[in-house]
Length: 325
Image 1 (cartoon, rainbow, N blue to C red):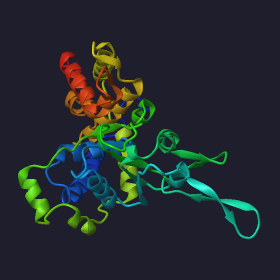
Image 2 (image 1 turned 180 degrees about the horizontal axis):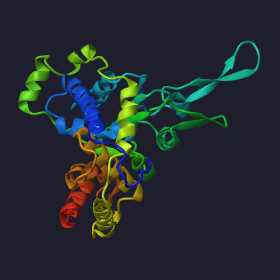
Image 3 (image 1 turned 60 degrees about the vertical axis):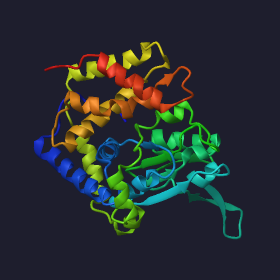
Image 4 (image 1 turned 45 degrees about the vertical axis):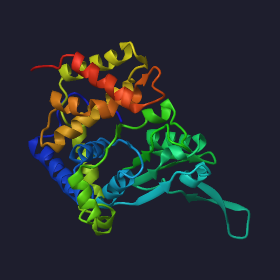
C-alpha cells in the first residue's frame, strides 16, 4: 500500500462518488449494527484504503457481526474462517490434493481466495497459521508447494480477536499486527442500542436481510479514487513528527513504523474522499491516527495491550502541533 504522488488526480465530483458509495455501505451496515458510526467509518476507510482491519474486543459485542454485515453489503466473493488451535495453514491458504487415479496433484484453493475474508478469533489460531497470513496481507498472494498464486482483487481481510489476556489465545506477533492497516474496538452498545438488539430491530436477526448495495467494481473504483486525494506537505510532515514522538516517548519500547505512517496517509485520504473532498485536512489525520498507529506501538510493561498504545498515540497527537494552513 504505497502512497501516490503528492498531486491531486481527482476532483470534487469524483470524491462525491466515493462519498455516495460509502454512504450506501454505511446505511446497510447500520441496519444491523446500531450506534457505532465512528467504528463503521473507520472500517470503510480501511476498505477504501486497500487495507486490512483487526477488530479487537471482548466476546459478545458484535465483532463478527460487524465484519459479516460489511461483507454482506458488498458484492464479490466472501468466506469466513473460524480460528481454532488445530487450524492448519493449508486450511486457510489451500493445499495440493490428488487428482484422478494417477499421482498428479492439483491445487485446491483455501478460503483465503475471496474478495472479503472474515477471520473470526484470529488469535485462537496457532502462531504457525497466523504466519500464513503474512504473505497474503502484504503481497495479496500465497505460496503453496513452491508456486505463488495471486489472490482475487480486491482482497480485504477483516479479522477479529479477543483481548490477549483471555484463555486460549495466542498473541499476534509484532510483524502480524503491523500488517493490519487499522485496529478498532467497538465497545459495548448503549442501553438504547441494546434494546434494539434484544427486540430484534438490530443485530444478528437482521443480518439475513442484508444484500449487496454496491458491487465489487464500485469498491475498486473508490479505491482508485482515494489514491488521487491530495496530501499537502505540511500534513505529511505532521504525520512524520507524530511518528517520531511515539518513538521517543519514555514509556515506549518500539514506536510506530514507517508502514504505520503510510497506513495513516491512506486512511486519511479515504476519510477525505468519504466526506466528498479531494484533499486531506488535519481532522482526517486526527480521527484515524489512533486506529492506524496504536497497535504498532509497544509500550513497556503493558503486556501487548492495544489500549496502552492508544493512550500513547493520543498523547503524541496532542503534543505535536497540527498544521494551521
